Image (cartoon, rainbow over all chains, first blue to last red; front, side, top):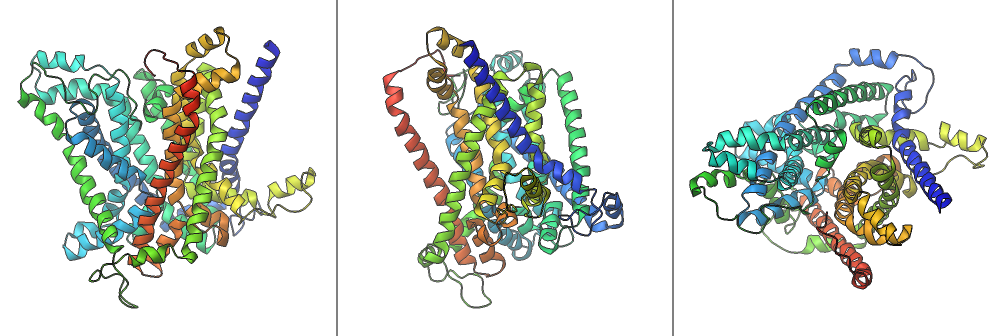
Length: 281
Length: 318
């Protein structure tokens, strides 16, 4: 029995090692190929730093990354704000409207990105040109709107499931002590849901940075986000600069992650808890 | 993401229990959902409703994109005609097979991560699962293009070690598309499964073993049933975006990687036939919803005899 147990555990371990190898294979390849001095990314010629230098001389790349970061931050803020409020309402004050609202959230989640994309493009044109809201001709605004939909639903789920698992007695105590609603929300409810809010915000930002399909449709020329720039580069021939940018972005995200982990650990929340929060637990 | 709740003081469908507080203190809380409601109505319900409306129209001429003065279901017939139907079939094949492979890879992996991996390292291991997620998904897919290229280093490695005799020949095939989609959506399966297995914990599994159940019996009648909510979330999180994704398929599948999403995009971007594109989009959503419903019904039917035979009631189902 003891022997079989260890065989089972060892094979699980080997399997997991293989999964990690699978997950990291293309990322390591991209890291290595970002030091390619050749003309095309896919054919490696020599090792060198030319691709990193090329980023500096190509403003289009920097502009694209900057557009993505702006859209990511703003849409994450909007999604986190709307989603947190909705999640609190769903967990604590679910009335007759709640099932309908949940159906709407589920619909937002199950609609594939491409459908959002083809629906938003004519809608933005309609709002911008026919209705005359020139706000919707702005590239960043369009990206923010497009990226915030799915994220809002996700944040609402996360916040709701976090709060629904917590006892309401603290908030009731505050109410009994005559704390006004806003103060009660800010001093009791918000700190309770903070891990969920942070996790949701981080997830929204990530989803926005990665969003290609909606962005490809709603983007306005002049404010092309990074994934769409890469997509058009795939069609015309990829150069090593693209890999260099993603290497830099990978290093930056890993740094940001480490920072978030440190902050949350100080706040008394381990990485496993964060994952549980993201996973809806 | 799950509707599964634990010791909830207020359940979803019930009205909140009566409290000492007056009503006016309670009112603002329900209104908290209003901004999200308004936002999603303006930028989701309205535009998707417009697409639904377009799908009953037609393309009026070479330069028009859509017209709705005559309503019909003709665009749906067109979207399901043999030319386009094969693409829907192909999409469904990639979607179903891709989701199943993700499940097969993730179950042992998430099980190990949640229950067997050293506790002190679980957090960092989990973060490592998410790292691919933080690299642009197009760039990761291009990474696979480099790996799978017939003249690439991986192909050379396979030939040098004698595992294959000819250069690797899977780039721009359905296999490459499958590798790409499994890779891109795997973290979305691992995460909810990890949470689910973590919740099951060691106590109930040990109790099951103490009562004489074997390893397999414990897994199938204790661990897996308790992890069911996570399983459902994982399947949905992988299956839905996978069905709509077409970029992975374009990069790795070339001409063979034709997905339904690509057809929809083509109708809007190149063919300028918004009516047909809208009908295709609606068909895509309906395909996703019905196949997901069928899959859960089959899973429910398949587990019915098992659940009927040994009914385990173990406290609350967390």
